[in-house]
Length: 515
Image (cartoon, rainbow, N blue to C red):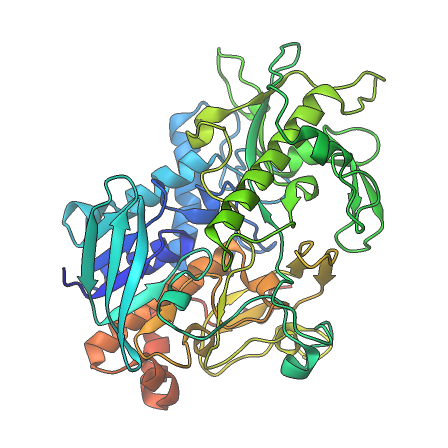
């Protein structure tokens, strides 16, 4: 099969790349390992983590369309009591648009539909990459396999985007990459380790959906590893793992959580709530629904990439058992304000992800393999201690903007949370370009960040912007018969590309008075 562009991975970055490339007339082949496109917001069950200004500015036009379509889907299909341009379906604390992952799946499929119906976009679900044919610094061909039918397909293209959740193309294509934490000598970052550690990788999480139906009993069978997780007490934790105590992400001190909003503590239920029943008129008495993606179900006992298949299966199993054990503990042992124990009305909603165990289809991977890029983003680029203005370094080759604090979860090397202030930042084109290949782009969390700066570049709007910029760059290169690195190095070509991005709804600078 011959196409203009192959996108490996149908997550947020992959979908954004496909939308941009197809809008520019390219024929695209995109794969996805699960049967759902969308990555973070769908198969992994993570509602958008966004900056305070996202409703006004700070993302691409297409990302804003995606957000608007999510909100409109609820307003059009539900009896919403107070519909508005700021309607938040779940009234979750983490996002202004906390919503059911199935709604994002619907919206993304609808946005891609014009290209799917005309066969301009070829979408292959349940498909993984098997091998790569590479000559010198150019990828020529990739081979994929359908995990259901075992059918294989070879695809030839002039350009390829690695938009997988863990940078899966990199080892197969023998592209240089980094895993874990760099040393201070390598990056000069104030918060870097004295010695590099490839095992210092952020925890991953298997998200779990729950509905609360007070007065009912939905207790699940005791998970096989319940006793282990019930008694587990890592050195970095102030109490047993399955408890309402956890380290505060910023102060690292013992922090008390509650399940529901009480007089004290942080209400975990509202944190990632995706359905607030009080906002809808319905004769059916539905309960609130939330997604369990909390400090207590972060898994950091082992990784699921660059390990043996046996270790990967073991760590996936243990991570799933952790989430199920936390649910079971909440149902049976969690202390209640009234002195009783357990919330039997917590119901595992297996229908939401359509999985046998009820958990998300994929693990939420915070930290991917990262390319050795033409430009690597370091802590100094985004730190208020190294930048005098309101934003981080304003790269000459910027292709977008983003904003989030440097948020690092507990690591597999035994390090605790690390939360560092970061200014609103820019996305440099050089971070999307691997040093040692000419026709491959990084379109997800695998760009040229460090372990530290990955913590602020991994969130939803930035991933979308990265993928969309990759799709636009491929179209620009084909149109002008040039290469990505040449675009970055040639001032006229770079300026022309940035003009096209602006005309297509990219924001390349922060407003002068954004706060």
